[in-house]
Length: 114
Ligand code: AMP
Image 1 (cartoon, rainbow, N blue to C red):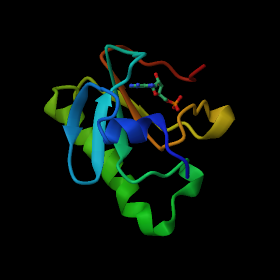
Image 2 (cartoon, rainbow, N blue to C red):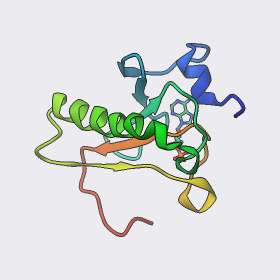
Image 3 (tube, rainbow, N blue to C red):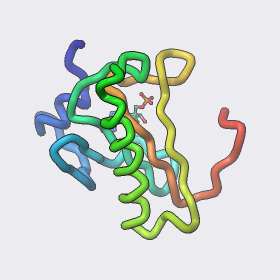
Image 4 (tube, rainbow, N blue to C red):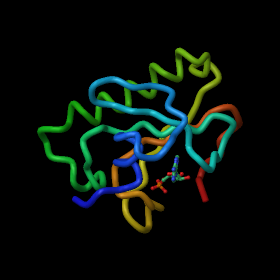
């Protein structure tokens, strides 16, 4: 896949407010937050969309979700609750084609989403 904005953030070519990093995952605050807490969890491995995840990366996707949940807990957000979202392609609202999990917290969420 081609390079994306998030690839540049991983390589520190553009700045981001990074809140978590390990060998496989990076997390940083969304530049246009939709909630008091809005963090994007991304794999360092570039995968364009959820459609493109091979079976061999199932554990990586699981790790992305659990990393977000554990970070939320570490920030005291777990009991009040939060939302995690992964947008896929145009109708899903995806704009950056490097998979990412949105973690939204700090306000009441509503369902259905717009
Ligand atoms: P999506 O629409 O699901 O592809 O989400 C992409 C997200 O990336 C949006 O919520 C944007 O606000 C966010 N975003 C775009 N550029 C940056 C950036 N330079 N730093 C942090 N977040 C960004």
